[in-house]
Picture 1 (cartoon, rainbow, N blue to C red):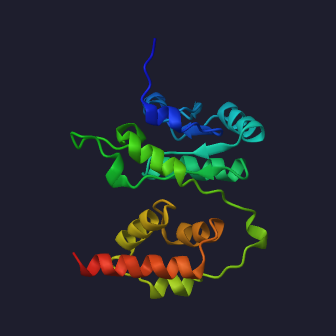
Picture 2 (cartoon, helix red, strand yellow):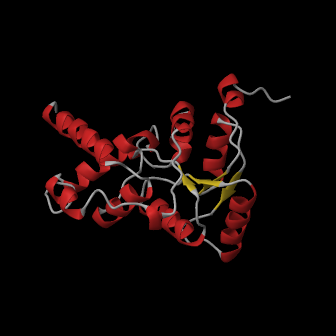
Length: 198
């Protein structure tokens, strides 16, 4: 008879979670009660995309991939093909293996996985969304075209829980997740204060 930790029993996820591989599935099931679909790498097959679409139609989907280039690529492919999927994110620092060799959801602590799933975003139909945060705002906030832009974008992604992005993706993701000017301003203030304290 399997003995589950109480925390895992407390958090049952209705949606099917899309992860990259078997080790990610093990980590997810250790932290919460959930079903998963594995992409088995960044070259997602047509069959896997059809399974994800079916899962989205039946129960909803949460994409929870590693915070690296292949993980972002998988996320983008799914987002393009399967409309309305939800997204869970973990910052890179929380996915590094204990020995420092390797990065991924499978290395994350159970509580970090649960917290990421509690804060899942649901992107909405972007055709009705006002573009309140402009590219100029991103330049002014030193998120684009600045020597520290990448580091600042990474930190902003952690603060807003929208994942790491490049400049163009950041603009799209802020709009997709309906980040308001107030939320953006508060996050930039937190980001600036964090830099001053370093």
